[in-house]
Image 1 (spheres, rainbow, N blue to C red):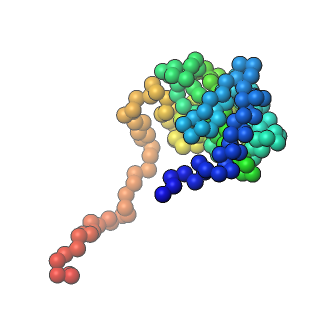
Image 2: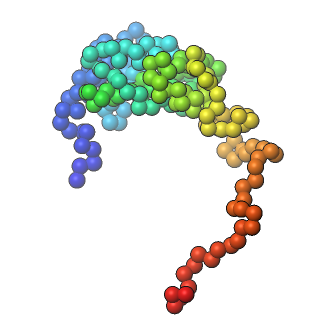
Image 3: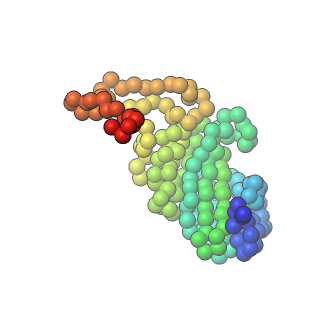
Length: 195
């Protein structure tokens, strides 16, 4: 049984060609490239502005043909495992014609904003809002930078490593949840004998 059908055939050659293109043309002037465990390229951008330029360039480059934003996320690098920078922005790009992937990573300091790519991919809108909500990373030029998952009254950003894991914020004006005016208990057990 094959676990990953993409690990064979023309897709491997296409991914290798994209990785070679990134290594030859884009991994220069301070940018570094590495491969993840699947052999897919990870290109480290120099700054948030550089990351946005790379996203746009990969769309125009005939050798990469990026046309889909698979995901945009971040993670807390408080431990410094991925070098200096408190947060790491991650852009997951895909080419639907070549069936290849490119990942761009970018280091950010604690209060450094990222650049929005909503003008490039409309689907980045909610993804950037999610990153803002959970990590507190702002995006320059975003059309509607506000919380998307947490309550507007919530303080803090729950996926930051310093956020207490068991911290709760009860709000006094929440609507109480109930199962109706005269909720009854219902016995869901099947009784022997079919009754």
